Length: 385
Image 1 (cartoon, rainbow, N blue to C red):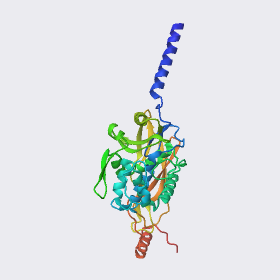
Image 2: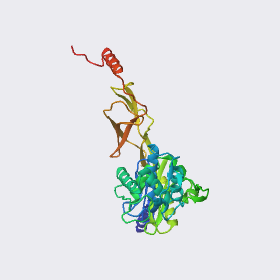
Image 3: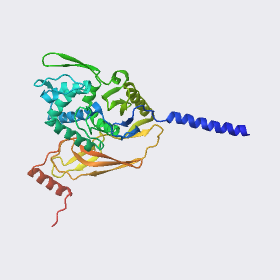
Image 4: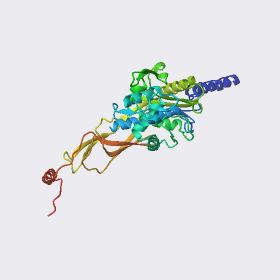
């Protein structure tokens, strides 16, 4: 009888050990790390992810984000020629050897930043977008706060060591999630090699500092970093089965560890989680009335898919949502916010912007008068005698 009891106890201990081995968290060699789902910023695994550390050239993720926003706002274009300042040309570290007084296009400089991690190109673009390097750094810090990266302080646009130039793995992942929304940047960061050609015809061969884009199938970004104080760092991203992940590792002792840690976090998260889209951004949520517009009635949609990230063992999904529309007046542009949808899921309240997909023009005096008379005849307006 005692032997039987010992056998049962041993069996339970074995099953418990086996379960612990299967579900054990990733064993990171890097000092800090995190993996999140990009569209929701849901944390799937982390290790000391809020510890402030030097980011090295991962800083350039924010630099590239501000460049992409300037391109989107059309304050600059890819074809614009940038005159290289002495300040930019004098940068050390990784560079494409820009010469003061010469020019290069925004596209060429952005490529040099994303693939070659060129510090001189980063400063040249900081001056182009911000007017000065100092003002661009202010823009970087303002953007960090806007995104919720509250433990980040940038001192420069390139990432060379400077006192107080610090961030966290979690903040870096948040910033990266904003950048990967621009698909064109992923086309650059997923390029393994290219050339940078100077005005005099001299070309420099650029090989992506992120070797995983060649050796780990599916990885298409994002940015490496290394300084003596920061150690080996890497922000990675890849998409599989309609779910994009972002990983960050900081202060790995050797390059191989940052690569291994990145792969292990990716594989862990993809094996354990999946993304479920509850409401598509293409779904018509309803129709709203805009009194002073020509069309008066307009359909509204989500700005982005309302998605949740679930453990693969989850089967039943229970949720509800409510929409609060803003009081808006014409004119309105495509993409303008007209309300907020709150998704109630698993004791969480997830907020999404509600937008329109068409331009709404303001009605003229006679159109408004005609609409008013039509409302009276249809009974939509009460006339008081």
